[in-house]
Length: 181
Image 1 (cartoon, rainbow, N blue to C red):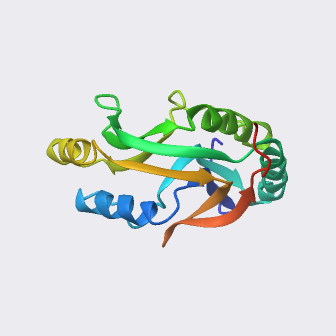
Image 2: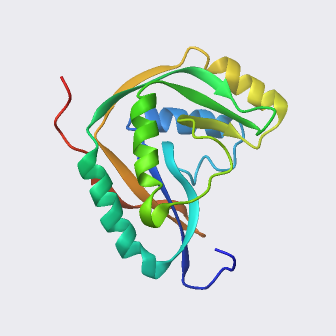
C-alpha cells in the first residue's frame, strides 16, 4: 500500500514454535539484547509483516482457512544455527526438517489476498538475534550451534501487530490431520 490509513492493520502469518522451545529460544533472544524478544512470539514466518486495510481481514481469514485445508500436518526439527550476515544482522535456529513443507505452505499463504512481494527469497528459520551488535550475533551463533528441538506442526497462526503490545495471535488455522504414508 502506498499510504497508511487509520484503519490499516499490520498482519503476519507464522508457525508458532511450541513450548518449551518457544520460551527457551525467547530467553536466548533476550539474553543477546534483542529488543524484540518480549514482543515477537517465537515462530517460523510464512508471511512477513504486511499492511492491510482492516476490511480485508475477512477475506484473509477465508483464504487462510482454505490454505489450512489443503496442507497436512508435518514434523519440524530445528538444529544448529545460521545467519543472514552480511546482508542482514540476523542469527537463527535452522530448520533442518520441514523445510519443503514450510516453503509450500508459505507459497500458498502468500497468494490471493495476501499476494505480496518479499524483499528476500523465502528461507524458513527461527530468529534468535536481530539488530544487535556483532559480538552478540557471534555469541548467539556459537551458543546455539548444537541446538536441537523436534516437534509436530499442526497449525499456523495469523498475527496482528499491536503498537503497545507487539504481535498478538488473531486466529489459529488447523492443518489437515491426515499424514502421507
